[in-house]
Length: 165
Image 1: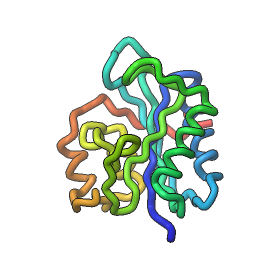
Image 2: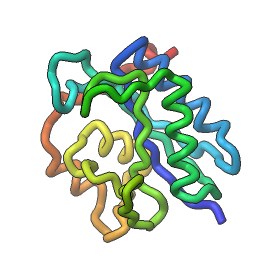
Image 3: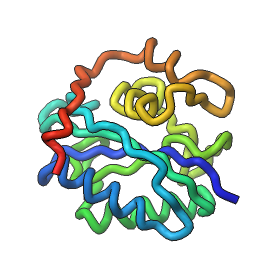
């Protein structure tokens, strides 16, 4: 059975737009997975430590027959291939891939929380999700659009397509 999975992408090191574009291609090539759509890319100031470059973020909509933890393993493998290092909480990174939503499932264990715990506070994740599906809801029925209206402003700026590789 195929499940809709929404993945948040972020980078603020080593040509972030290139990192995200490459990650989208790698996500589209995952086994038992099809890329449905890709959002626009957005720039925003970092969450947490401000002594780092602005981030570029986006999201993809996948249909996958992978289980949530199998998908997480694939996401972490892609991050590692991009040189991801976890040196500081909310610190700079070459690539961050977050499983934001997985069908209508709610999961919370030591490795994975879906919907993503910080989703209501992240305009740079909510807006790309709305680009992909304006009617998207959380498993509890909360509209993503309602979360976006209540979300703190992180100086989100849509990047023009001409900036993409």
